View 1 (cartoon, rainbow, N blue to C red):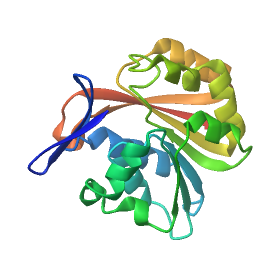
View 2 (view 1 turned 180 degrees about the vertical axis):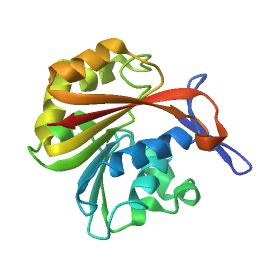
View 3 (view 1 turned 180 degrees about the horizontal axis):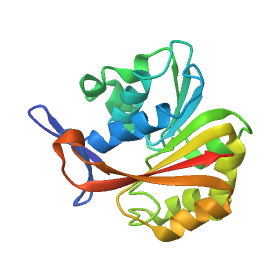
View 4 (view 1 turned 90 degrees about the horizontal axis):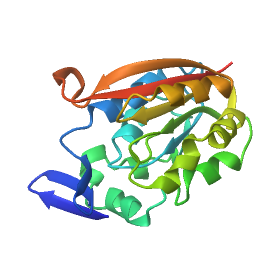
Length: 205
């Protein structure tokens, strides 16, 4: 994984594949907005899986209350370091916010560690349940992984999942895990349009 910079533009790549670009973050902000608007308590506790360039984290912090608690699980230490240094200007130094706790760990391990712990879990890991860059991430979206997310949420909590593609099989798995499911189309550049992505909003009933 490499961080590239050209002027004010950043790009994170693996080999020849661009995972994210600092010019395009509308769908990451939509993930934060859609998740937070479903929270009954804006001073609740959230878990974000996948730090990326920090746009989802920044979006959450701008929408939750002063007593909220946000846990960020990021597997790659370099991504955390880039957000604290080179990319801090992109997200308003979100990692320095006192409401934030960073865990350099696989998000599924963090999910499994606690029960009834979160009002919202936001997953932006790899490219979502399909089109995976790394097959090892598949277990997060497996029936076992979804069962762990269900158990980690408080009643009425939301599991929000970003995806590059529609995946009817994943919708079925969410429902089989006990979630009430809604799928929302989001755009790469927000109101400016761009590529279409998907956010699943799965409520623990």
